[in-house]
Image 1: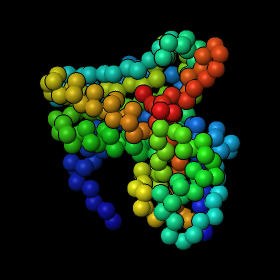
Image 2: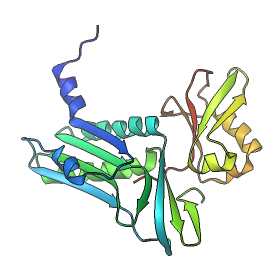
Image 3: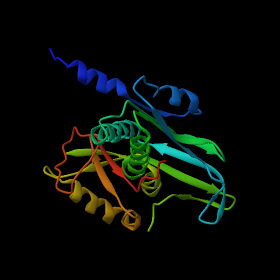
Length: 152
Length: 80
């Protein structure tokens, strides 16, 4: 039998990670980080832009290695809670599948007692997500398509 | 031993299928597997980066692979 300390259990419930092929409910993501101890909620919302490297984008497709992406997302969120122990809650939701201009691709939401740490933690999570999480973006243009960042 | 390798994104397109079975000697390392795949699929060597993942973690070059491992090729990620 394994015993978890109450602290460990509360640590687990701090973090909410999701990978979905449905439109992201931004308000639900924001509400999920509400906490009595929070004086700040900070959110990054990544959306699909209509141009990339000078070309008009028609749509995007995100492909994910689901099990690893979820595992790595959780690790990034846990690293943030180690670096900023005052984090009250962390939610990261990433979209996969076909997205069009203006669609929400990713939401990172964090809550902290004071604002400075909320900005820092939110930026750390989105920046690190982009480096390590196993999700791939293919951009479709009028005249072709490209896997983003695949080649030097 | 036979290694089953999951492929994603541009690596899946280069190889032309979502999974690959590779016969490998006992004690094959992640780096050794990459070198073999670069020979077999030269376009993989043109990517900005290509990592091997073992059981949902990025593997170091000298990580030894086991038949029961969940192995994947990880081309440059571009989420967010």
